[in-house]
Length: 382
Image (cartoon, one colour):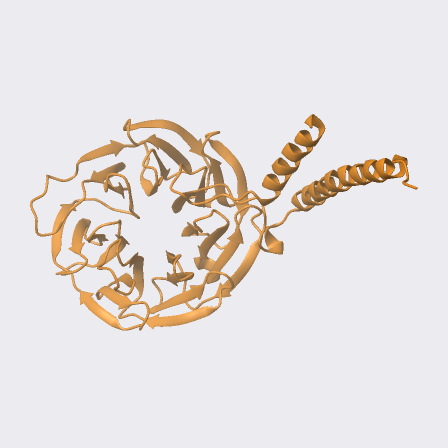
């Protein structure tokens, strides 16, 4: 019995290892991807607090997003006019699409398997299929794009509403219905121009402006509230646990933290707090569990933050001029596409399946041998 029990345990472990995948279940991220570092995209291992590898990407990669399971990277390459999907595990290219202008910004709708991209040299917003880079739809904006974000039913909008694409331009903030392609609203800022935009869970969008202000906009009424001014603000991120908004301020070399806002209601004085750095911050990423933050600084340094402790953990050099950071899980072990596989991974899979076959054949052969031997030794009836 011990013999068969051991085989059962080994068999179970081997099968589990072959089919093990990583799920985006809201757990702590394992990796941080930094676009614009020396060589392209630096990958920081959160546990090791160090760069684990560099994915070589030309064309000055600007924005980078990650599929929920950590399998694919979506990257804009403005200098080459491309959007590329990469296998996060190997850095191999899944597909590439050439677009007019300089695609720079991204927004991802995982429910519709759609990636939206645009840049500030063209009025065009392109919707791509996340599996093959094929164009699904092209939206025409009022002016070149400064930023993109999505608002979803239940998370931001009433249940049953279509997903909305918010695009900031020099002529106002366009609100587009992603299903019909129709413009739902254009929000103008008096004597100012909207730049970056973030839409966290809730009913409020946050926008930075050319004049150095931060505005809050109600997603339903489109009412606007002024929150802060006097900075040079970059791409924002938010803490899903607390709703706080983290805004890089290059002018004051600080990270500005805003309390969540409900437009039309009383609110506390902003900012809630600031974190100072030795160099200007360009981008920030907050992990989905709200425990860690990553800030990209001029000069190629990445600062890791302890968010609850409100302090710096360490500084990691990636070089280059980092533009954008995204955090996520380790890529799944089992590849879906040939481009995701490596030679060592293929070899390991072959060996594993070979061991699996041996573990099935050997005990089965032994069992049959014992069975027929026992049958042969039984006394024959007359």
